[in-house]
Image (tube, rainbow over all chains, first blue to last red; front, side, top):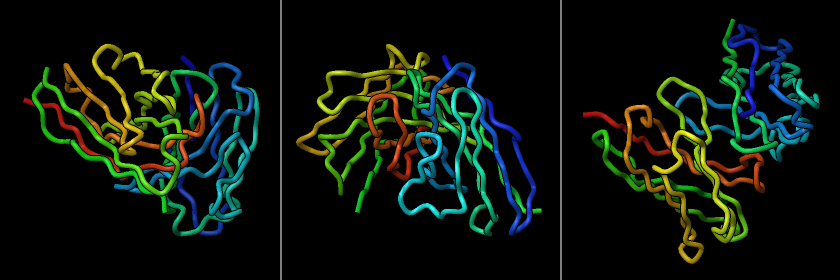
Length: 107
Length: 119
């Protein structure tokens, strides 16, 4: 199985800050990586797929990069509605696996 | 508008069974791979199983193989998860989601249904 490791597990930031979350796969997954945002009590919401393609309707302050085993999600200017938990997911092979999550908290 | 509405969750004793349903609307259900993802209380996301458009291919996470069965009824735009021999560690919110192909990402999600396995 492909293990997905996210870092940090939590980050404290202020509105307007640039936030970067990393995700590392235990083996090469090309660009088959997605990012999700989850708010308390809600279902996850797809932000980015194929490592860098922005899902329709997602604000452009979100961006993704990387290939192979190392990937990054960047929020260019953190907004109040962005405080949430973010998950990466590999879409390379079964079983599909998620990272452990990164909680973005208010500083 | 795309809608995925799960139902069938509840409290069940260890060793018991439960059948989850997911009613889909607003997209071409019969042309879509579909998946179940679960989330234990306070924990992260875990993919459970998925199924091809015509039901001819199904994949499962190892811990549910032989206990859970995913199925679909394209005429009813419905997805199912039959869960047998339930264990305490199956306690979670179960989400159905549309998957953009085999081994892909999930672009639409339901609101989830809670399954609690406890005596």
